[in-house]
Image (tube, rainbow, N blue to C red; front, top):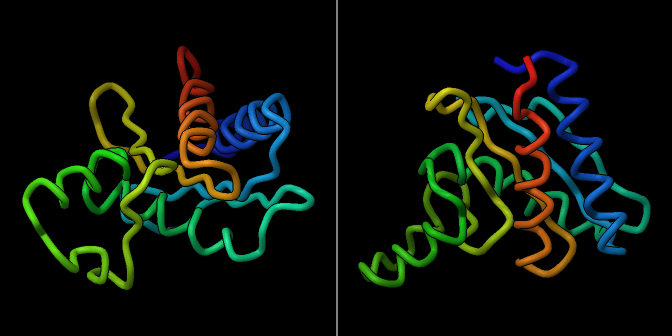
Length: 133
């Protein structure tokens, strides 16, 4: 389970990365059970992206892969309609599983910018945990 300091660091790092890119996004962090732990909507972030950020985080936990990689797998294996399972999955970049010492701890989802920017911001959030407790 994440502590409050870790959640704050991840949100702060994600916000800083988004600001550096000049984009406004929604950031969601879930635990290993895909339950929402933290959420932040930057001023000007698209309202429709609130749900997408949360679904990206959830998808990254339910199928412990980056959402972009899951999307590629779905296309390669022709797993049509998988995105309709589990109350809706997201199969493009911006959702990343969070692992600490090899153990799945949760996921982060970012939405509101391009898929590549969302991925970059999500990875920045995870990097905030490096060497931290």
